[in-house]
Image (cartoon, rainbow, N blue to C red; front, top):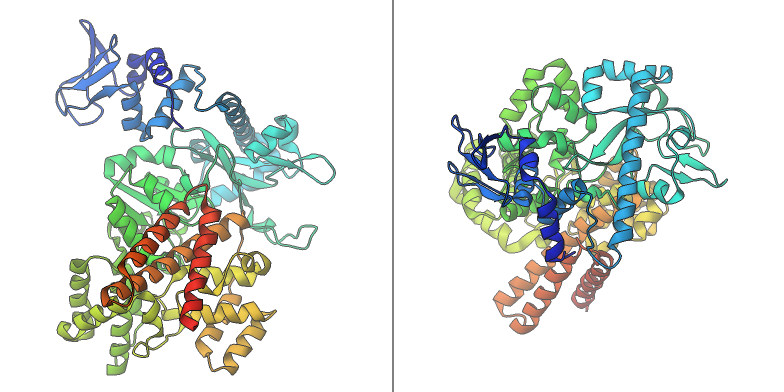
Length: 611
């Protein structure tokens, strides 16, 4: 929302720039100016000068300059509006961002205040309450002592329905507005978290905005009244002060080291993040119960150019390759993957061998190299047939990368590993690029491969199938066959669509001779059920990825038709513009409308091809 210039000027005038900068820089009065060592570059002699009357600063060494808003943006890595809001909060100024901003800002302050009080209550429970002893012992077993618990302000939610509600009274509006609780069927206020270790979630400026809760291992097997197993983690739902897509756990603590090292480590869980801090790498963050997405990358690129994924090997390999490469190019970042020992998470490795964890980060490899090594490591290189199959899969992997220079470098790597002539591989890469993702998987020249080796195929489709198996009604309300670019995954989904159970779907596929799709369903059905804190958010994230993948694949088909003269240039360009516009809106408030329009467009393409 836009702010009136008068209000921005009011915030500037109300801010004591010397006091603001003095929180980070030791300033000394020199005549009418204040001087100190520049916070933006290393120096031994003070060249940083602050003009209190004008409210500006300047460094004669590195030429950094600006006002209070600029200083907050540069040091706390906030956008303009967030910097103004932070300074307005400091000065107790209410901003009128729109006609309803007054009440909205008042609500926001109430929510933030309640969240801060709740987290303080949980923290004191962990430190002092006898009921929290099992939690303290569990944390100690994971190497998290009292000092670390204080550093991350960890807490404990008592095993009671309304312990927080009694300790921190709040109105119904604040209760739901913070996500800290809800009103149950009996009309009683009830805590969101019960008998869980509490991980407070802060925004980048250090304001508490949400909570995550982990159940103790010995309690995880206990059943609730409805017969379902308690999930390991519960995370706050989205609220007026909390957006999962834009929030990274521990970024408020990690940002200084991230900026210093120009590297950010992305983990899967909160304890993994803490493990990295304890291992001397305080630049780790984690997503908050949602998949790593574009909004996260948009945030991270403000802090560092190198992003290291420290996931379990299988999880890292499941990232949507096309999206990662696109984000690398769009945001000018480098995405690497740490090669952790199979079956080991960072928290376990940090406790057992912290030096090995540090080494894994230092030796992280580019995302494409990691995916390619996964294919080659799983291949049978002892026979000509095995090497040929590996070459086909490897070519499919590298053809996803948008840079011809990068692709060619990896062509030579593949040739060396498989003892093939690179001149034989290059035309195959060209063919794969020409066919595009949709025809690549259905081409008779490319055999369909077992699920364990499907590194070149669309990963969101696997997540969508798993979601359909575990949350059938929810998934079928959003997903359609046209969303699946990979024909194996599409066959599997269509079988689930017309059969009530996975076994029936698999049997039908086997009857049709589609053993690969049947095996994929059986593999997913035997994995642990999904533990979702927000089913609607998860299906939205998965659906958005599928829609993007299917739409971009269809756009490639249109562009090929345009180059071959099969379609009218005017019609194709209009369609491309419309589709790209709707793809952009998938990240906006118009996401639902955009998704529906893209679904109708994709289905219309199927109708045309069938006719």
